[in-house]
Image 1: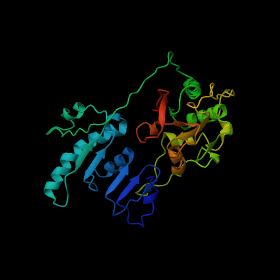
Image 2: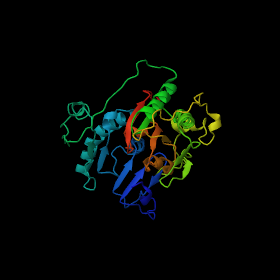
Image 3: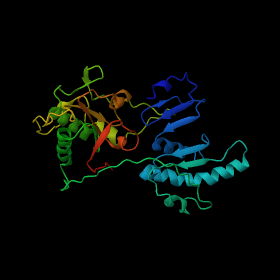
Image 4: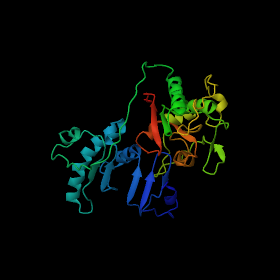
Length: 318
């Protein structure tokens, strides 16, 4: 589901709930499974190292090794023996279980790490999966400054020459995404930058930022990098964003049934409302290619159907 079904819990909570920096739904006394970002869990462990509210913690994509994940694993490695000791002294407290999940994790980094697990190495459960062939192409010359233009040209070339399949493009933040969306609309779209829905109707494909409300505890959140960017760039005011000088239409060179003639161009970043983010999962009309311009929120957090090509600028906001 898309999360809409758990937003009306009647105040007591649902069996499954979620909490992010921007919204929380279904959390209450009846909740038994709660999805949350690593930042939310980090804020909870700051107030309760033993995490008494939980009996099992699952850290997915633990191979990413970002700052939050590394700090969480370090704190949890301290919390596990403390929680076990507390459980021995108080029968109302159960030992805490920690599950680290990853598809590409180097298991030895954890099983052989005596600082993380000084007593017994954790058990390893391997689940076989499927892999698909991926062809990687690198630019002959690395552009250090104007990488947006290089990415723009690569996207247009893919759209003109390659068969059906969506294109996922990674940029660093909201401002870059807005610039790229406008440039691609001007070059690829014949409908004034509007995206057709399943019924053939057209609607604007750039949404408004989600409202920044309090988190589950009612404490206002601090602004992160993307929110600070939002202070400088208005999503609804494209006239204030430089779109470069790419005015030449970039429709496919060869009219072929295997090459889409139209493009559906959508942004994706965390400040977009849930409804706007959900548009990337909508069916794409015949003869159209989906092009998603996203931050790394689309790298591992979600899976966008129909993506065949990925353009990565190789940049990440620090």
